[in-house]
Amino acid sequence: MPPRRWSRRAAPRVAAKPPTALPGCTPEDQVLRLTCALCAREARGFGYIHQLRIGEFPHYRFCSMACSKAGSALARRMGGMIDKTPLEEAAIKAARRPLAEVLQELGLLAAFHDRSPAEIDRIIEACVDGFQAAMQRQVAERDPLSDPIPF
Image (spheres, rainbow, N blue to C red):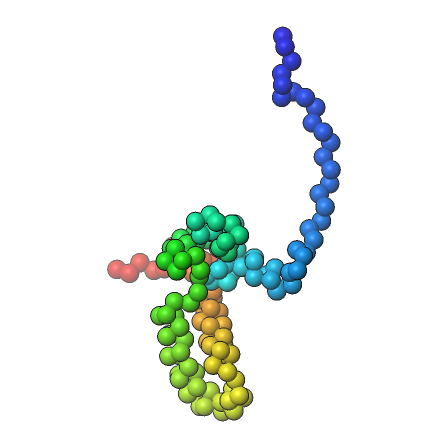
């Protein structure tokens, strides 16, 4: 019987080198590469490159298939880039006034008086993102059978 080709002895494996930082990358850049492009949660292996043109368009990473579908649709519509939509930008600008009213009621408006509109927008985005992440986490932890029967 002839010897089988795949029955050769395998070469001994060499231990892998520990990962090193990418040249020219700061730790902040590396963290950005590991977060979802839409919701900023931890990316979990879902990705999108517009028209598979590596190097020409950025590589977006996503945390779930839902974010991947939404992000890829958004990137296709926006020509390969994922930015805030005009509707999101308008909503953030509209939220500035209610934020200022609450800060005035609490006596905290003086601390935010010297801030730029971009910094105020970052505060609003952080609040909205934190709220959404908390809601998603609570829904995921809830037992679907624990609700009482509605009738």
